[in-house]
Length: 113
Length: 114
View 1: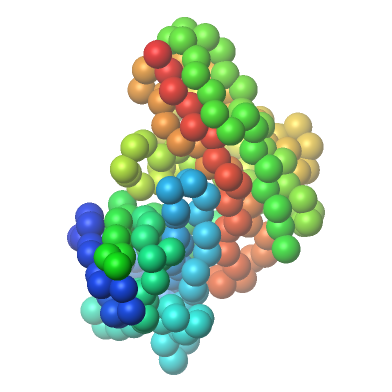
View 2: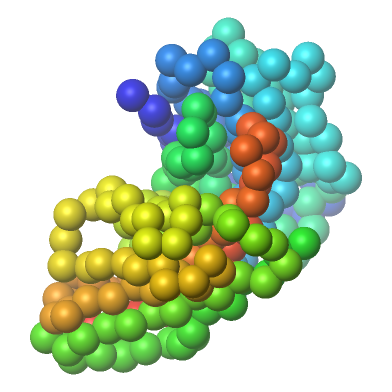
């Protein structure tokens, strides 16, 4: 079975601090992709970062980095130097073999000034 | 890059009324297309996906249906809406078979069934 788990319904972070959003996954496929999306209050889903299951290095995109621990089946998102505009819902997703994406239930991040 | 259009942006419908939500894609050809529903404060539930014209796969049996009359057009319909159909509907497009190819999402339609 394919499953994505996000155990933090809500998180708070002080502006300019770093924050880690947790994501664990379950799949028996040897090849898969892991994604993080941001959903602001407007509703649109914005792609942030991608990690392939065979990638040796953790992915980074600007202030976003993905802490990929394959043995633990975790793909945590790290946001450095948080900004007020980072307040949003964050979704972890997995694409195993095929064209379907599996999403977690999301984490609501609030950045405190 | 791809651009996904959805309309209407907001819709309020009575129970038992029909529904038609439209999604169109620009900037790509022959994409895989998806309809998701998101209940308030919840994750995304895959409703339908399509790999080509006239090819629809249903993930959740319910009173909704989908059609793909053109390569870059995806329509979500219902003959009679239920209260439980309320939610935020997102259309997504996927172009590419690579594991790293991401879905692009439209702005969504917020549906309230009263």
